Structure formats: C-alpha cells, structure tokens
Amino acid sequence: MPSFFDRGSQIAGPGFSRWLVPPAALAIHLCIGQAYAFSVFKLPMTKLIGITKSAPDDWTQAQLGWIFSIAIVFLGLSAAVFGRWVETGGPRRAMFVAACCFAGGFLISALGVQLHNIWIVYLGYGVVGGIGLGIGYISPVSTLIKWFPDRPGMATGMAIMGFGGGAMIASPLSILLMKTFAGAGSMGVAQTFVALGAIYFLFMMIGVLLVRLPAEDWKPEGYVPRTTASALITVGNVTVDQAFQTRQFWQLWLVLCMNVTAGIGILETASPMIQEMFPGHVGAVTAGGFVGLLSIFNMAGRFAWASTSDYIGRRNTYMVFFTLGILLYAAIPSIGHMGSTKLFVIVCVILLSMYGGGFATIPAYLKDVFGTMHVGAIHGRLLTAWSVAGVLGPVLVNYIRDSQKAHGVPGPQAYDVTMYLMAALLAVGFVSNWFMKPVDDRHHYQGMPAEA
Amino acid sequence: MNKTSPLLIALAWAVVGIPFLWGFSQTVEKAIALFQ
Image (tube, rainbow over all chains, first blue to last red; front, side):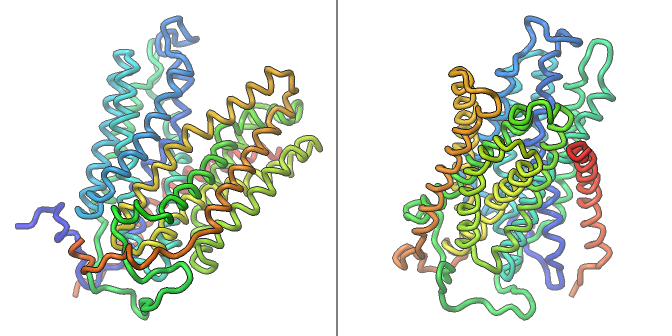
C-alpha cells in the first residue's frame, strides 16, 4: 500500500484544480518568511536576565546577530544538498520535513532561551530551523512550474511573494505573543517560540495536505507546449549535476548573488540609514514606517516582476533590474545631499521591488535555461548565492559605513561610497546577465525525464 | 472524475489570504507614519 508520502500518492487525479497548489505553497512560504522578522526578538533577547535592562550576563546584539546569519547559511546549504531529494520524493514529503525542522528549530531555541545557552539557540533556529527554511523554500517551486507551464513566473512569484509576506505576519504576531507571555520575571520569548513552533507546524500541514503533483501527461487546457527552442527558452532538460558544470549556472549564480547583495545593502541598514541621511527630518517611528514600506515593495515586487517576466522574458527582466538599479543606486548620494526624503523613499522602494523580483524570477529563468526536469534541485544549488550575499551584503555595508564615520565623514554622506559600491555590484550582475546564452545541446539529458 | 469543489479552492485561498491581509494591514498602518 503506498504511503501518504510516496511520490505516487502525491499525483493528482483527473479534475484536480491547479489553483489549490499556490495556496499550498503559500502555506509554507508565509511561515518560513518569518525569518525576515527575527529581528523583533533581538532586543528582548538582550534582556532575558536583566528584564528591564541588559545585565552583564545577558546576550549581546552581536551574539544574537549570528542566529539569523547561521539560519541563512543553512538555508542555502540545505537547499543545495537536499534539492535532488526534494525533486525525487515530491513536495509533500519535503514540506512535511520542512515543517518538522522549522517548528523543531523554535522548540529547541525555546529550550536555549530557558537555559540561557546561546549555542542551543544557534543549533535550534540557526541549524535545524535553517534546514527547514531551505527545504521549505524550494519544496513547492518545481511543482508550481509543472502546474503552470503557461505562466511559470507568475506561479513561482506568488509563492515567493509569500516569503516576503511572512515577515509582515510574524512581526506583529511575535510582538503580540511576547506581550501576552511576558511577566514579572520573563520576557516571554521562550513561550513565544513554543507557540510559534506549534502555530507554524499546523499551518504548514495545510500545505502538506493540499499539495499535489500533476500527472506526467497533464497540461493546462488549451496549452500547447513548445517544440522548438527560442532565444533562451530550451525544450530540452539538463540534470542538476550537469547544470552545475555549465557556464550558465555560474552566470545565474552571479546574477542572483549581486542582485541580493545590493538589496540587502538597503534592507540591512534601512532604519539607521534614513535617520542619518536626513537628520532632524526622520525619527525612529518614521524610520519604522520606512522599513514597513520596504517590506511591502519587497513582497509586491516578487509577484509583479515575476509575472511581468512571463511577457518580457527573464533575461530582459534582469536587464531592467540591473540598468535601473545602477542608475538609482548611483543617484542616492545626490538625493541625500539634496535633502529630498520623498525622492529617497521612492528610489528605495523601487530598488527593493527589484530585490524581491530577483528572487521570484530566478526559478522561471532556471526553467527556461535548464528545463523543468531538475529545476527544483538546480534552484536549490543556486540558493547558495543567497547565503553568500546574506553575509557579504551586511558586512560590506556596515564595514564601509563604520570606516567612513571613523574617517570623519558626516552622517548624511557616510553612505555615499556604499551606494556607489552597490551600483558597481549590479554592474557585475549586468555583465553576467548580458552574456547569457542557451545551454549547449551536449549538456541535455538524452533519456526520458522520469528515468533521471 | 472528482472535480475540485470551487468552495474548497475559496477556502484554501481564504486560509492563507486572511493572515496575509492581517499582516499587510499591520505593516501599512506602520508605514503611514512615514507620510504624517
């Protein structure tokens, strides 16, 4: 008897609506998107012993900063390592394991908080939770591409938009839970971790129950699959191991890495940056509003740009990101010197929409270049670019800003060099994308997709 | 042939849509501070 998690039992019967698959994917991505909101725990976690203020034995911001970094590194590593396993076992098994790891990470971290042992938190949220993030992130991608061959950008954009939206839910929810559980001798963090673990596990189970794979011969009504390759859209398939050896994989790796590094440059320092660039005009509350606005555009860009890429092509979409991005990053210092807060905000939200758009468009780009057969696994390996960018972006931005300040550069000008550097990084991405060519036929898999 | 009920599709979208809209409205509320 086939098990609930066997690939065979995940195949949809005739009459199954493909419109159940995006909510299944969203149920996963809305949960794991919590990672972007982890910063709401940073301040309370520096006062676990002192409660009203940090005690000498309390954790520092620097110690806590590593939790998110470890999680992002393990996101990339697990996506790369388990990509093929996700592909062969199907999305249901992957989503279940992702739910166990992500929720388990919270429970282990709750123990770490209770025992006040930072290493247990690193292991819990960072390593175990990070593995849940990686598997969860890639679990619905290839399934969505198979269900929506006519609109792959829109389909993956919808799911990956959920990752951006997840922070919007997690941030107020976590604050609400901490307020509920906080008492005379507790910040309520451990209890909040336990509650979040339980809530996220149950919510992710909705995805596990809903998701299905299309039958091998299924196609949307009226859809005629391509029979001839055009420009950068292949009709062949490349295996994950073969893709790793192509120039195109590394070009796309560079494209994603540069786009993400530049976006993180703004995301990481959004609140202090706007306050320092416009002193006297922008306070902490307004800066909080700015961060919220960036989250909205980061999320909206994922759906809007990925859907647009179905019409204008993936390569052209990235050409827009890089060309416009270079111009806008290079313009930020002048806008700062002009003192135009409104113009600065407009430029930043456009940049953040392209940061989100970069994440959401890449699965469809991979599908165009390497085919659908192993697209989930190839996407998993490509996400190591995110791990690198997750460390590179903040390090670059913080190091340059601190160095500028140490050299006596006043606050409003302290970000000029950073912005020019971000424009230069995007120029590297532009070149990499510009030279994108179809994969040579010798890399194409010659057997039937099911055999690979 | 078991055709998926439109009610199930609507329910599935509501389950993910409601928390999403709640989070979205909370964020918009915070972002409004930027324009005040």
